[in-house]
Amino acid sequence: MTSDTTTLTTPASFSELGLITPLLARLVELEYQQPTPIQAQAIPSVLAGRDLIAGANTGSGKTATFALPMLQYLAQVKDTGKSVNKNKGNYVSGLILVPTRELAKQVADSIKSYAAHFNGEIKTVAVFGGVSANTQMLALRGGTDILVATPGRLLDLISSNAIKLDKVNTLVLDEADRMLSLGFTEELTALLALLPKNKQTLLFSATFPEQVKALTEKLLNNAIEIQLQSSDASTLVQRVFTVNKGEKTAVLAHLIIQHSWRQALIFVNAKNSCNHLAEKLLKRGITAEVFHGDKGQGARSRVLDGFKNGEIEVLIATDIAARGLDIEKLPVVINFDLPRSPSDYMHRIGRSGRAGEVGLALSLIDHEDYHHFKVIEKKHKIWLDREQVEGFEVDNDAIETLLTAEKPMAAPEGTGKKKRKKKPPSINADIWLNSPDD
Ligand code: AMP
Image (cartoon, rainbow, N blue to C red):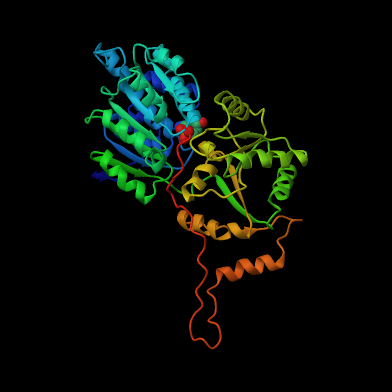
């Protein structure tokens, strides 16, 4: 990959980006007053057909960044009277790969919304696991202009000849670092082998760990690189509370009751922890729903819809909710368990403070989490004051343990040797070994 990182003057309006009238009219209806920085910088290059690797904060408008140029390309090709693909049947022109079912649906819904002024001429279909493949096969009859897919289900549909990838014009990897991680390697390799060589490739994520960045080079050709992460510009406030071991649930319940947040999204690390925590909160008078990969797809959709429309106030989830989900004006995300990888920290907290809204991200750490949180801070170059929750002050012995773990240990008297500082528990930085959710 060669890449440009030229500083571009940021266009102030969507019309300056070169978008066509049906899209501009829709953006007015959606009350998008001006392009977000990633949209302003990336859309002209994507319209020009360039490959792109884009890193920008969660909630910064990445979907429109790839969706608007894709729609414009398809509309223009159709306008010229040329069929986008001569061999109709089971073609796809724009392929967007995403890591979770919910994100597939959300991205497809956004694209359909952006396409509202094309009078149904541009077809968008979402395919993902956990639901009947037959309905999706029917939807794919006659092909589709845009397909949003999770990799496993897409491979199944390809093997039943419901869709072919040889006419793909644009490939998007949304949450690209996750798509390129170990959990998806096999599926992604199989899919990439079916795609034509001369396509446009667009990679988007809020985080690009170094190991993943090396992989991206093989996928891109003369790509533009745009990195826009900026913690200064963030409207998301991050706070961390030190709590005594065994008191996290009590502290969480206290914070929820004290702050009366309209909604809260709480992350834990295991599916059964979701249910345990929900039961414990219920005993403290707080009703919470759970969202994890062991729930059936119907239940997953119901819970997510309920949370998105505000009927569910407290949601406890695993990391399947960490990626891409757009929950309007979500006031707070709470890390009850710290995420295993520093990248997931960013994705989790990015569910709040989206699209310029004010947001809050809280992490509860007991002494076992202390070093792990430092790794996360170091990775993201943040340093947060350790706060305590009134009424749940951490006992002095525990604080002492934390602080001594911080300082290099003094050499034991008489030995002349320095005592080795205890190594913090290693965490699996940025590599997902778990199998994908879908
Ligand atoms: P995304 O990062 O694509 O998930 O977008 C996050 C949220 O920002 C979504 O609710 C979008 O509808 C919204 N959004 C995207 N672009 C703009 C814009 N230019 N102005 C206002 N809101 C936007």
